[in-house]
Image (cartoon, rainbow, N blue to C red; front, top):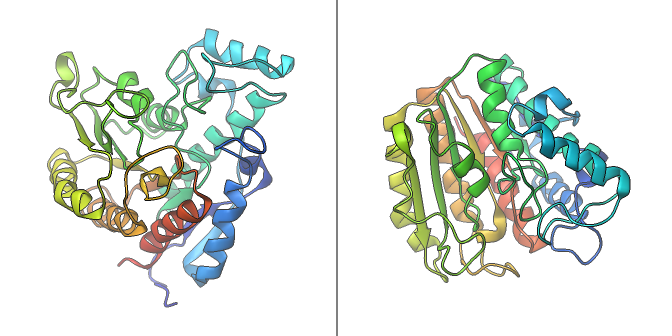
Length: 321
């Protein structure tokens, strides 16, 4: 594999801290997802174009950039109790869940810092992209919303304002969408399975933002069974949207549950769609915002699918010029 010595490496985050985020053997979001991806990535042999980086833990103050104090306290309490649910029944509590979920958020923030400092050209965090958690609640296997925290962190620490969030997970990124629904500077583009057929039931094309933010959000629902051809047909809308809105930073949520064969969704993309999205976001980030781009793994419950798709994302970041 050829590398590009003219640019900083792509940081890929790896560590037991990330692997611990999961809900046990037999759960779709199991602890094995981290290792399956890293095995595939190592086999791809990307050489010195990538560099492994370590997770870090988010502070309570960092969590509070997006989440309410009452919700942070609830997770902390449930973490000590070690049982029950953090929501209506999708997201179990377990002993230490507060610390484990804080590690996911902190690692996404570390990726942001690495790209902003120039240490990394781009960065990828496999166990991250927990896009269902709202400001005041857990949802859909997501305890804390690392993407939402990252948006606020970019504003508070790095002085940026216009952040683009692009999501190709099969599920609508509702925690991000509704967390910033009235924020015209959070630029949101989401291709997902139609909410009439899949959790969380949101993300209609008519949902374009509220108040001053009307028209700043792009939701593109696809019918069950849609594959690469349907993705290719709608993807140019996302590229045009990002190019026109000129963000200062791009977060790409790379959920692999949109690939054919996922056990809980009904889209039929191949990993080629993920490679295409990553290459396009790399090109646009380089053109518009100094290369400021991170990828986060998101969903994906067929292990072979997520390993292939996320490896293609990292490969696109690492080899694109």
